[in-house]
Amino acid sequence: MKLSEISDYLTLVANDFKMLHLNCVGTNFMVIHPWLEDLYKDSSDYYDTVAEMAIEHGEIVQNPSLALNRVE
Image (cartoon, rainbow, N blue to C red; front, side, top):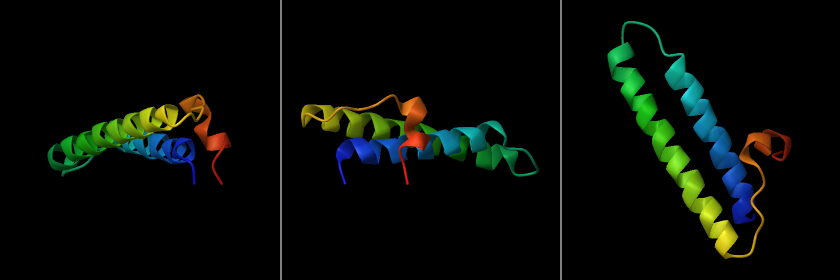
């Protein structure tokens, strides 16, 4: 699997964590909300790192907003 393909999965994971973070409610909100924020930030950083590595290796990194159309 190419690095650019891995970056597609990472951007989708980051997006899922962001949505969980934004929609977190309930009695454990103060515990779960910052934890999900950390997961979102970390997964976004991983995406950025892998996308940069892909570019360094001559791969084309496509628009991340279209990643869902590219994964299987």
